[in-house]
Length: 127
Image (cartoon, rainbow, N blue to C red; front, side, top):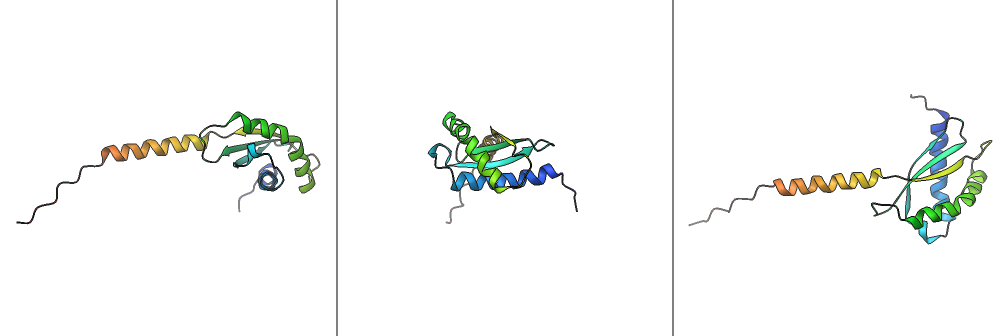
C-alpha cells in the first residue's frame, strides 16, 4: 500500500468538503456551475490552492472569480467547522485550464478523423 503524505490526504478531504459547501451553502448564482478539479496543500497545511472549472465553458468568466473571492471568508469559516485542523488553510482559487485544453485536443482529433475518413465506394449495382 502506497504511503500518502498527510497534505495529500487532507487536500482530498478539503476538496470534498468545499464541493459540499459550494453546492449546499453558497447561494451566489455566479458560482453555481463549478466543479472542483483538485486541491493542493502546502506541506505545512497553511495554504490550499483550489482548482476549479465552470461546466461547459472553456474559459473562466470574471464574475465567477469575483463570486469566489467574495465568498472566500465564509467558505473558509465553514471549512473550519467541518474539519479538525490546527489552522484552516488560506484558500486560493485558481482556474484549471486543463479541461479546456483537453476539450480542444479532443475536438481537433475528431476533425482529423472526419477529414481522413475514406469515402465509401458506391455499392455495386445488381443487374
